[in-house]
Image 1 (spheres, rainbow, N blue to C red):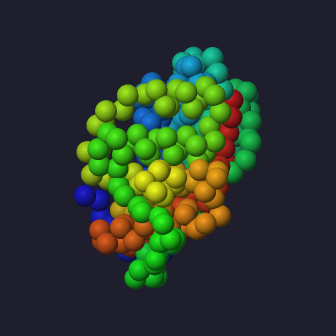
Image 2: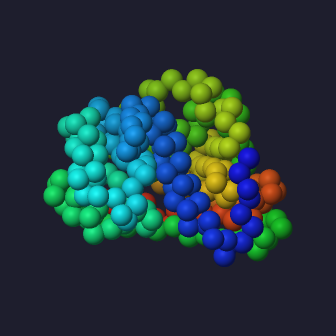
Image 3: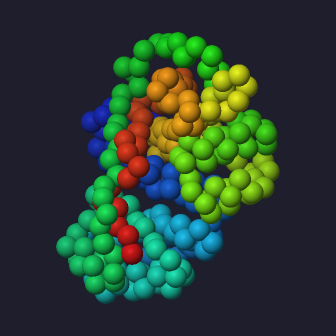
Length: 253
């Protein structure tokens, strides 16, 4: 188990939040049943039918030579005919990286914003909205409920929705000790979700979504707080939340 970071001023917090985001990206690729590539200079995944492809990690630093970056980008591009995205973390940004990305046909489309918070400042307990029951996916049926609510909550278009709804996940995601998939039910119908990820000594909250017809009732806040409170109960002090759909400079090829 990694050392738990106990303060927002911890010198490793920046590195931990980047590592958390990379891990969350990898989990997303697994949810989409993507094909992963793990090479010396990069890790990325490709979903050929969906054209949903993403760089997860590179060991680059601001001093990495341009020719090495160019070779890696060429290798990544050779694995897919579709668009490839990369949420570039602050620790690897450099003029040579920007130049290589531009030369190889990548362009910036936005930023992913995250926020960190001290879990010791959470209220001891908060009431859920009336009628909402929150559970952790602990069997194949409830995990399917999580996926179905994710599809509806994020309003995935076709062919994404059809692809996800037809994946046979089995129990693949049910025995991972560092991730929890939450589902919120109203009248026993899954309507809202969140994910808690424990990594690099911090907690991460991702994929908070509510189906369109059940929004503006405080469900998303309740799902977020439930995950945060569990992280605190497990001994974590710091959590990172993705504050928008896009997060470090997002580069697309």
